Each structure stands twice: as C-alpha cells, then as structure tokens.
Image (cartoon, rainbow, N blue to C red; front, top):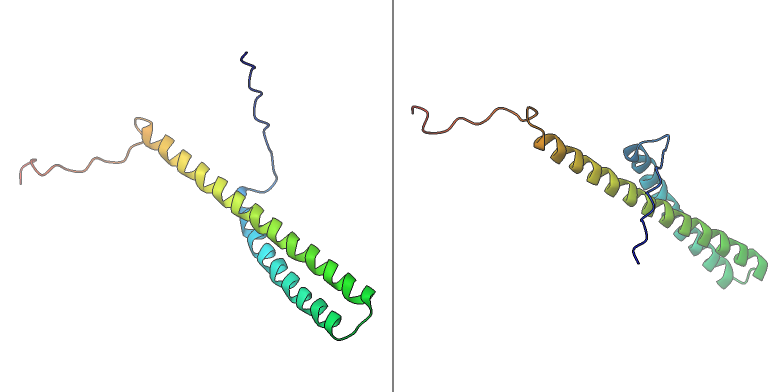
Length: 112
C-alpha cells in the first residue's frame, strides 16, 4: 500500500542561511569554550571544600552553557551545508540552461 508523501514544509526565515551561519558559528564556539571554563571553576569549587549547593549550581550552569554552544555550532554546520548545497544546485541549473552558457573556447584547428 503506497501512501502519498506529504509535501515538505516551506521554512521561511528572516535571515539567510549564510547570515545564520555567520552568527551561529562564532556564538557556538564562544559558548562551548565558556562552558568548559565554567566547568573548571565548578570543579575547583568542589575540590576546595565549598558547599555542595554552590559548586552544583556552577556545574549545572556550565553544562547548560556547554550544551547550548554545541547546539548552536551544530546549527551553524547545518546552515552552511544547506547554503553550499543550494549554491551548488543553482550553479548546475544555470549551466544547463541554453543561452546562459559562457563563450566557447576556440579550438586549436581554427587556423593556427
């Protein structure tokens, strides 16, 4: 039994994929590094004898920050991949349209 395939939803975003990549990639890298630094701080608090609640909250914040950075960087990789695929698709479409091709190279048998 073949069921019809539902159409793909059209995702309309205010920003282009390239702009989203430019914003998400550095932000994701910054948050990932910041989460690792906060984890080191929480680790130091734990081993220096601070109360449980203090280093537990610091560790939780570090995990949230680190994971947020990974998510944003993953989204940046996704946006860049889609951007490159669409750019390549447009490039191959324009090459296949007659009249959109560039000048043909001269052949070596044309009189030399």
